[in-house]
Length: 187
Image 1 (cartoon, rainbow, N blue to C red):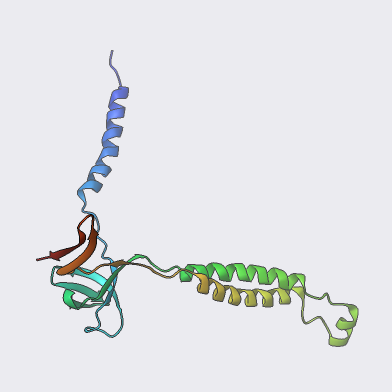
Image 2 (cartoon, helix red, strand yellow):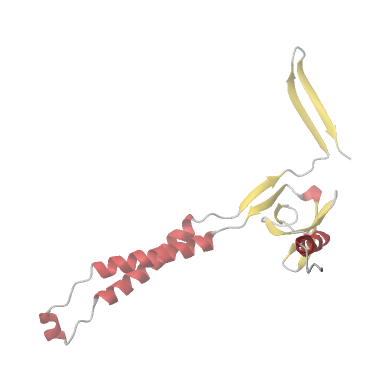
């Protein structure tokens, strides 16, 4: 008597099939994203520089502005900020435009005057129909919605990172002794 297959073999084959993609994914290196930074260095540029951080060491920051890589000495950096979330103004403008078009279209259609026989007789037909009024209301509502959505949409969120100071002094009250001072020197 021969056995055609065993449930154990099926389970084992399924486990091997599922384990291989997980092992392959673990073997691939994680993609490292380069953070967007905003650098304030008055001696390097008059305004804040928004760029991508390429490399950093104790003496300098290397940032990419477009395709150009610029090295900024850390001693010249007065403020360094990292972007934590990109702005959402475009998304809010799109949502505002869609909602404004919908509201404007409904209001325009609902408030349109119906054509009566006098208008049809005098002008040869009704020029402003409820559909036309609804379309005009949708256009005006969309424009207003885009403006409102873009104005209330949140901008990019920045987190300030303190530049490394080589020498710092701190003064604080010391219990029972008066005032204490701390001098910190980094190399």
